[in-house]
Amino acid sequence: MTAAETASQPYVALPMRSHTILGVCEALGEDFGINPAWLRIPFAASVLYSPLGAIAAYLVLGLVVLGSRLVFPRRVATVSADPKLIDAANSEAEVKLAA
Image (cartoon, rainbow, N blue to C red; front, side, top):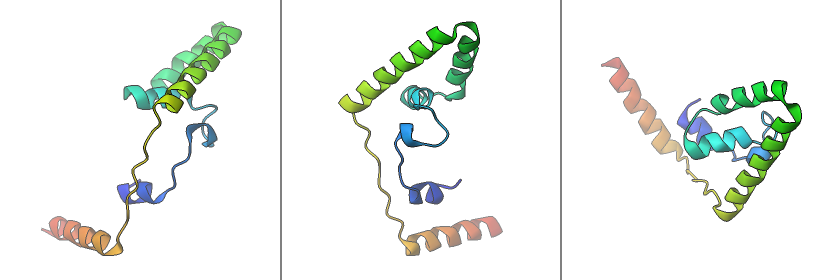
């Protein structure tokens, strides 16, 4: 996905995304700059070991993430996509590619 495609999509809050449960692992991954899969794997393994403990830990972390997002709200950068600028950038990239 290109930057222009990402910028044109509206921002959806983590809990409302279709590919997350509460968005805890994704939110922690964003906050600490790591891939959320590295957090999801231990959580999945802990569900096999102790389901009640894993669910409790997930909910507690969800409350921590919710609290941190309420205290320190995220600012979503809005990018105005001017068609003239996009066409100019694409033509420059094509010229560099052709050379």
